[in-house]
Length: 494
Image (cartoon, rainbow, N blue to C red; front, side, top):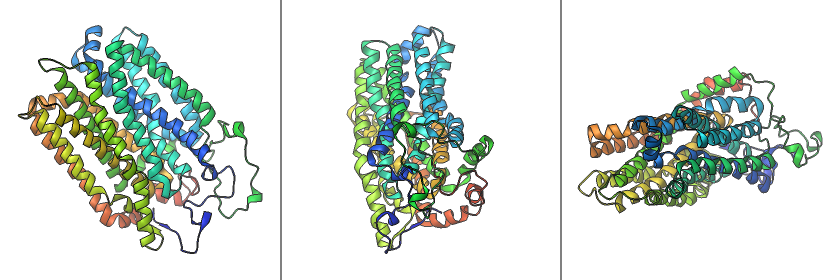
């Protein structure tokens, strides 16, 4: 499972893995423009999804005053949006297995648009909360399905490069989106955030109608001659919303596959690692907002938004080494091993990210809650380093999991988003109380310990990953796939 072998005498398209069929409509055979116009539209949706999740964090005082609610009730607006952003994929991913991915995106975007418009108009807290949850649910399709899109469109030596665009979109939504939201709140109102996100989602929906083709493919037979396939479809034929339907799969079986994949140790570790880094990133965000909002001279919303540029820069700096660089490293090690590519080659940079992730939390925590609590540069720099480590780690472990079980990339994406959503939800609701009860320095020390412990589990996979993958091939969804009981052919991925 996951091991890719390319004999030395195979060159050209024969050396590509997965090996494409001769069908001109096979997504692996699409040209770069066809692939990236679809993929980058989905990345734009992902940017809006994470921007949507943090739109209320900067406006908490105004929301509490306007709706006459408690601090906890205001927290629910963000917490349950994050939870819905993860849990929504428990619905979208199985549905995409049945209907294909294009119909899911075309359905999810209008839900996000409608929810944001509802949120912008309501004057009742209960309606605002429901609208927030609904917008998270609609946006979740952009997060959970993207790993499956990458597995459908790109070869194994391109996956990290493709996935880093997705990670950059998520980070840009969290950090650049935070700055946009802060400026909108300062100069207009919190309701304008709902308006601009709804408008941007509407534009994305129209782009998706034209650019997002169906990537699910069920007829990848590499031995079938080219004349056995039909002609290449024109643009509007490729936009058919029914072309991805899988009549061999029932919805209950799709649900079973998704829940079963989490039993695989490599998938569970990837989900926990991403969940911890995402949760602690949210903790850093909320701690900085609270610190810089409660000093004797509280900073402006604009300043609070500008602090998020540090992790944005950190995330963008992770783009080269953990995108193209990660693919290049894996290819180099594959060449050194006579054309044998193992998913574990993705994990060789793990120690660097463990160190940087721990250092960033210590830097922020000791200055926010230590003797230099009035200092503002060090915690922002610490948050920036954490942005680098979080983006690099997320891309590394997610690509590792996809390389290990490429046929279930969508299910892996769902598991990761659920775990991350639960972690962030818990931090939003109880993080502040945790700091008040135990003290900031103790809390941040615990955060470092938990993050290092979970990430260090990756050493087990670095050393014994192949044996773990071989073992998992004898049970669960991989065995069901081999026996034809998952409803997913071996030629169909994600």
